[in-house]
Length: 298
Image (cartoon, rainbow, N blue to C red; front, side, top):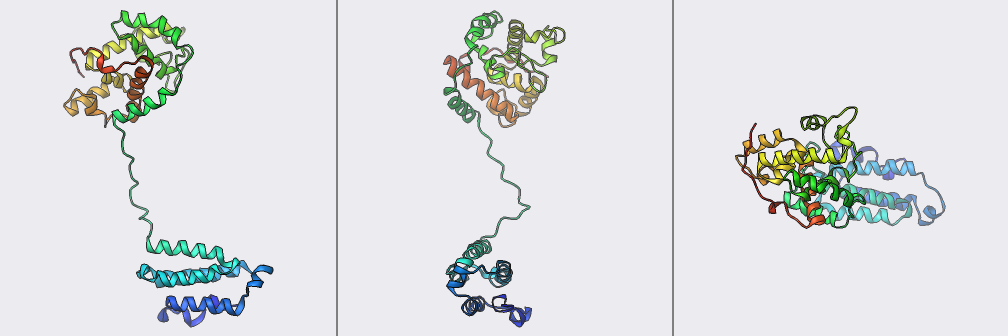
């Protein structure tokens, strides 16, 4: 059992390379001389030795088949058919079959750059969120807050439907706090809240639903007056007005679609989710709201 399927000695010498036919013949001879079916059924064979043997076959297949693997599939299948005949060698048949397929269709180079997933469009993002929001019930406390806060948005000359932004921001939870420090129904950052007249420390007025809503409505009105478009206003609410203004200047356009491929993915997702929420909860489209004069600046 030292030679046989191990194919040792001159048979594997570099100057006398084995052919696929010789590999098949050696396997057949070894199996016929050393193994009967009843042996495999009744006796545990030395799996380690058999593994070493098939490793030698695999190494030789690499040299013999790799340069011209596909035309030699018939010879390889003959070898595999022998291994499949015996219970103990069937696992190795699977192993060598997979190995041969790798020779025919090698894996791509490991240094190949990974494929970049296609970036979703604004329309695709909105449609995706429409499907999600259509199957999601509104938060239980939403109705009470709508009755309380929509008059505030109206007083600030902001469409009252935009109160639904609070579902996206905090699920109508006035105590919500984000990991980056945004607080309240409309998730106001400290600097933004202070610029709108709210205290953020002892007490943190952002936790007061009416004060948070008043500040958010004022900020949304400012963003809408600045960018002239509700999609852009929402993008600026999420990503910051400075970033959105810079992207618009670079694009030479005042369209959200013109910069949607460059805004952060989080912002793209946010705008689509707000649009879908308004459509599902109120049946309205942002495009129906009036558009003011554009005043984009630094």
